[in-house]
Each structure stands twice: as C-alpha cells, then as structure tokens.
Image (cartoon, rainbow, N blue to C red; front, side, top):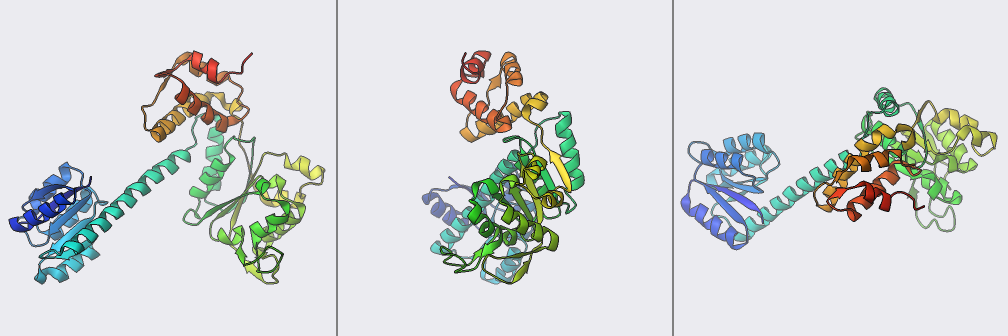
Length: 387
C-alpha cells in the first residue's frame, strides 16, 4: 500500500484529497504548510507527495528544492490554483513529476498519481537490479593471483587494447571481461557476448557479421550481426578456441581494418568495437594442431590475463562462500546462514573441478538442505563424494 503525503494550507482541499485517496486504498498523511510537510518528509518514507504551490512559511517550490536534497527519487505532484499554472510548469522543469489544477478532477488526479507510483516502482526496481548486478560483478578475494588480475584490469581497462582471457571453465573469465568493460571509456556503450562454442560453424559468420535477406535459404530478412550491435562498445568472444577457421579469417580482417561485411553483401561496414576474447583451451597448442590461426592469436592477445582455478587460490574460498551466502539468502528472502569453522575448512580443501561456478551451486545446495547453521556433517553429506 502506497504512502502519500498531502501538503496544502487549505483544509478543505486536504480533506477532499485525503478522502478520495483513502477510499482508493492509499495511506495518507497531511501537512498544513511546507515547513510541516518537509518535517514529515524527512522523518518518513513516502511513495508520492501532493504539494500546493502557494503556502505560508515554506511554499511548494521551496519544498520541492529541499525534498530533492532529502530523497530525490520521490515523485512530487504540484497542486496549482488557476493563477499558478505558469509556476507549476516551472516546477515541473525543476523536477516535479506533474501538476494538477484546483479543484482537482478525479480521473486526472488518479491517473497522475498512478503514473507517479509506476515511476517510483521503476526507480526502485532499477536500483535493486543495479545492486544485484553490482554484487554479481564483484571480484571476491584477496589472494595474490586475484590481486594481480585486479591490478592488470585497472591498467588495461582505460585503453582500447584487445585482451585474451584464459582459464578453466567456471573460473570467472566472463567476470573479468565485464570488469574491463565497466572500467573502460566504453562503459556507456553495449557489451555484447557471443559464445562461439554454442553456435554451429555454419551460422557463426551470420551471428558475428550479419546477413542480407536471401543470402542463404533461411535468410528471410536482413540481420544485424554482433560486431555492428557492439559498435561503440565491447564485443566479448567467449570460447574463441571453438571458432571455425573460416570465421577466424573474417574476424582477423575485422580487427585489422575495423570493417565487416554481412553475409551475402559486397559493401563494407565500419565498426568501432573493442574485442575481448576468452578460452579454456591452450591456443598455441591449437595453432600447432592447425585449429587456430597464429596471426589471430597475436591480434587478440595484446594483453593476456590468465584466471587461476579456485584450487590455485583456496584462501579466497571463505570470502566467496560468505559472498554467495549473502546473495542467495537475499534471493530466497531468508536470513543468512552461518558456516561452522570445521565446515569452512572442509570447503577450503575440497577439489573444485568446476571452480567458482561449482562453489556457488554448492553453497546454494547447503543453504537449502542444512539447518540453521551449515555444519561439517552437512558438507560431508551434501558436498563431499561418497566413498
């Protein structure tokens, strides 16, 4: 149920608005002037404020300015007399959500109020999503190998240098790529990901470079490829070692010339893209076996970042466990569980073949299956292999 603050020095207007909105199911607080309204606004969280413009002690414009300093996300709807419309319009320019003329017309009032509440919900959802994304992008741990990666990212991210990220499956290669993008000058542009291993060889060129209508049997319309989609941003080529040699040649040209050609077209398209690639394969071994182009390897690997396995940085396990306990408890809407020392010690020496991805799954499993605390017995029952 939404909380609404009505600020107006006319008691009859306050009473009318309060009765209407209470009937609609809203919780209402009232204030007889801007000063009283500001005091209530600073003491309680509201979803929307309805505020008169002409009031004693503190007028609506002053309230608007000061309320934005306290909580800029709360929509303020100005209530204006006929002579105050110009002032109301000016208030909207200063950040008010909208204005309603006196006496308020019921449908106009309710529609404006619902629009303001919708906006407030979107603002709240966006903040929650940003917090979730921010948490998911954190690089957790203080081990030497991880600190080296963080230091490298700080140096590399502001440049446009291409980066090749190596490491086992589940070790966090995508996270490193996202951190490079977020800390780069391209972070306002898109980050487009292509899993080269998940796309059939015959479709990878269309996926990367796009195609023209009729260029092959199933090409019923023009398609924009990932290089064009990522223009001005970052293209993340995950599992680059699984890309076909034919597609490798075209990627090499795109890197050399900054141009791509859609399948079935003869016109070049200029693209401004930073390419970050990742692989769990030994690319130099793939070069020896004629599966990967040496010239493309050198083009991609201006900077090479190796992400160590979790077994190579076991000292980070406790921090990662605590991190996942926080996130998963929040997702499930339940209190965070504690992990007994013996249980944490067992997790530190476990053989993490699936790396961080496996650790997260294990923590989620323990949260679901354990009691109030995660014990060594829980780890033995639900994590360690059966003998």
